[in-house]
Image 1 (tube, rainbow, N blue to C red):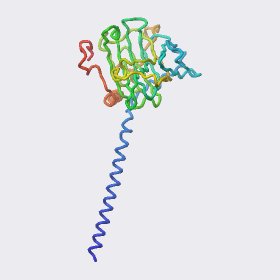
Image 2 (cartoon, rainbow, N blue to C red):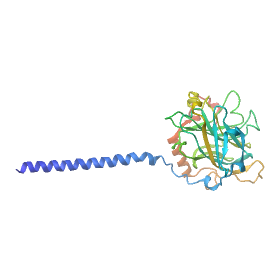
Image 3 (cartoon, rainbow, N blue to C red):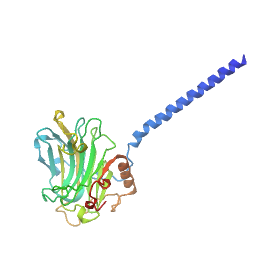
Length: 315
């Protein structure tokens, strides 16, 4: 009679061990499954310029430029809605031009089928220097359902965005969040030493001055717009805007400008790129930028060897 009891004891012990192993496995799997959501959170850059600059009412810093019938403004003038349909898009422009500064806006873009739609926030002097203009771009490029939006950053210098041969300096990202779900702050910090592209104060790209020929140093205005860029915006133009899904609505709020306008005295100090006020970024900012680029960058012009790199001495 002892043998059956021992067998039952062994079976019970084995079952308990198996149950314990299953519980441990569930715990391990559960802990692993939450890691991606934790990894989505970027490291702190340690410096938050957007928090030091007050938001402005739209009319204090900007005017409508085109497509006024495709813009509405909240009663407090802090929330601008723009949309694109078959008849038009819409755009706005800062009242003043600047020779350096911080330019930011919180933006929310439309969901669903948005191929070809370009929601932009950028600096330019195209109206002052037609055919030879400078431009610093942040463009949110629409997509098809199931595919992510693309943030494109770009720099044009002294007409490289004009004419038959376009010499762009693009860096593109699939962001670590859904830009259709909520507002996120996109900003350009442009000073005499470099250009920073910031998303929620995370520096996603730094474009340093490496020479006068490839760095914009003339006064520019700030712009925002929504427009049809079907020729190139989504998968190189493979997917076009489909106006069965119109209107395509984007919203801007928390508009911020700080820096030296074109009429400022010579001793006007640019907005610093780091808390120390030095030329470079802090170690925390560099770590945050590395995180963003390693996780989210999907294109960098310096790594595109189909281009003529004689046009890009900074690479």
